[in-house]
Length: 251
Image 1 (spheres, rainbow, N blue to C red):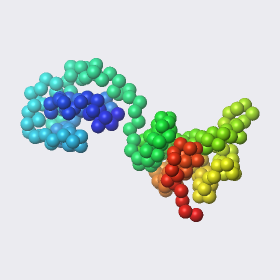
Image 2: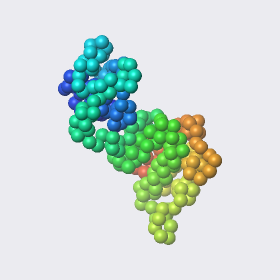
Image 3: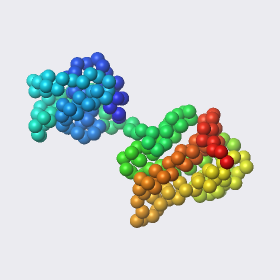
Image 4: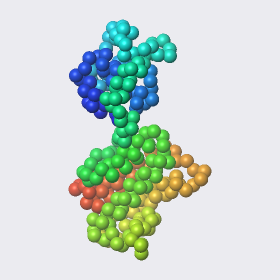
């Protein structure tokens, strides 16, 4: 859970400065595994949330006097008392178990998926971005591959021809076959650029999944991010999950 979301959940606008520090200290224990904090840390967070900058010396006096806090392991470090932590834990029991994905639009703008109103697609985009931001590049490339595969299937479904990409048992065929078929289907008007580039992302995901000594690196993805975004936008349009093809490219 992002700190601004927690701020709204805890209604920090309605509590005192010291109570804000209590809530934020609890948040960082549960979400970031950071049990100790400095006044400078908390001041920066409060400012980032839109609150006034605390008076450092006055806040230090309040922390030292409050039974909700104890001194940390080093000078100028503080932490929540066990009693206060337990009280907040009972108020927010599932904070550390939240399944919310923390991500920014670092690789794939998540707003592209919002018009689809399909939460599973939005969550995949969030996982792609979160993996990229946290240097989990093999995981990122695998999720990029997965989103590509799902959207290709949706393109065939949008044209009411999903049976053309299923095997005899009714399962969808592998991604290589899906790509070959979408490139050749006249019903699905994939652009020449997309036809040329689309297999790149299958290969990237395959390297992360199957090449024993391969580790995906940031540049492996960063150098392809614009092409990936364009292909995803185009597939969303062809799958009729968005109304405007913002990814159209001049030929």
